[in-house]
Amino acid sequence: MVNFGLDGRTVLVTGGASGIGRATVRLAAAGGACVAVLDADADAVARTIDELQAGGAIAAGYPVDVCEEKEIVAVVARVEEELGPIHGVVAAAGISRPKRAVSMTSREFADVIDVNLVGMFTTAAATGAVMLERGRGSFVAIGSTDSLGGHVDRTHYVASKHGVVGLVKSLALEWGPGGVRANVVAPGVVDTALLRTIHDDDSIARNFLGKIPMPRLATPEDQASAVLFLLSDAASYISGAVLPVDGGLTAGYFNTFTVS
Ligand SMILES: NC(=O)c1ccc[n+]([C@@H]2O[C@H](COP(=O)([O-])OP(=O)(O)OC[C@H]3O[C@@H](n4cnc5c(N)ncnc54)[C@H](O)[C@@H]3O)[C@@H](O)[C@H]2O)c1
Image 1 (cartoon, protein in one colour):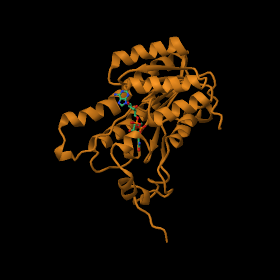
Image 2: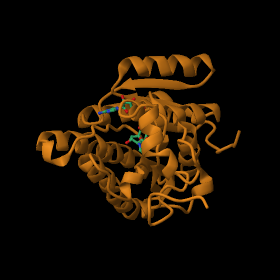
Image 3: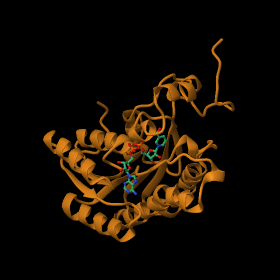
Image 4: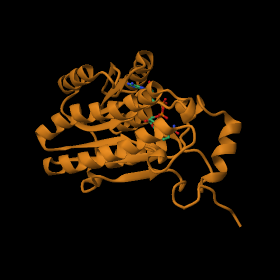
């Protein structure tokens, strides 16, 4: 296993009870980090913490909705009390609710923006404040290849994920002088619950597999190792970057490729 040098450091992960967030929590804990798992799904938080503690990890769970600003601020203070000063933050909480723009209400549009972008801002503001006090830290936002281009049935999701890039680039400017870095990991198509609630095997084969130069779905672990790199001191001069972890999906002008 790659050593990301996070031993004894506290890492806070929103959306940490499933998919990319959970894989990140597991990998950080396996490297000796103290992990704080924040997620709206209380049962999944309990299951994740049980599994981590059974493996000997120092881990604490916080069932919380990233849209609840006061609760997020309170949880950040509790994490610092219970696990120690926060070194790294991963904002992975997110939702996707595919729908055509012309059938969508503004409330449905705003609901996705609220979780994916406003919730990300709330997480960043609350954790950035404490990391800046110490002049050290790293924030990693989970964007998407939908941070880089459009997607049918995803106007709200794409708008939120483009917003994540603007948010993080601006944080990199604000926080750089204070010693805190901010970056985006932009996953391609990752095999998680979020994907499986939208696509079955046939739909995955039809929509994605022939379009990804590395012809497989990403695993949550593919994303977690990129996230941990950006949290680590190996990335100490990287800030404001957007790192696609997409098997080459966004490398070309066309989203399809041919094999001669
Ligand atoms: N799966 C993919 O193909 C893919 C691709 C690109 C980007 N992403 C992004 O990766 C991130 C993680 O997605 P995933 O695929 O692991 O999905 P997932 O559904 O497995 O995990 C998302 C987690 O976020 C939590 N969550 C949702 N709303 C929340 C809220 N308001 N407050 C707190 N927690 C909340 C859920 O309970 C869940 O545990 C998301 O931001 C998603 O947009 C996923």
